Length: 187
Image (cartoon, rainbow, N blue to C red):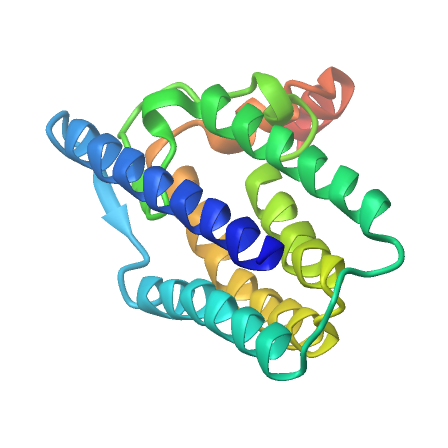
């Protein structure tokens, strides 16, 4: 029962995030934003949706129980959720599950984006490991970690290309290393 409640809460959280993403998409496109990566987006949706199905099936069919390390894993899960909320709030109206870029928009460099270009992808990667491990769903953890790597190997370059085309993305991330920025401009 605890597993069903746990997974239901996570699915409800994801559904709320999708509603926020749709609202943000409408707001951005209403202001001239452009969408990229439409061809790979269905694959991302398929991986994320099938993750929950496989996770649910593995735990119920194989009667998996909580890991002996569940307290540590649960703390890691709560840390990923804090990171997720931090990343989403840092992007505000610019956060989306799709690649939607507002031409000329200022690149967000606050919150976790001060430290890493794609914190939300790092968080999702951690979740694909931590969530199944809480309930000893090792097959789900392994398979979806690999599928996530495959999806992100397409997604991140597409997102970076879109941001470079329509914003000052490269320059925004060079600002954290002013000396490197000066050396780059000399070349």
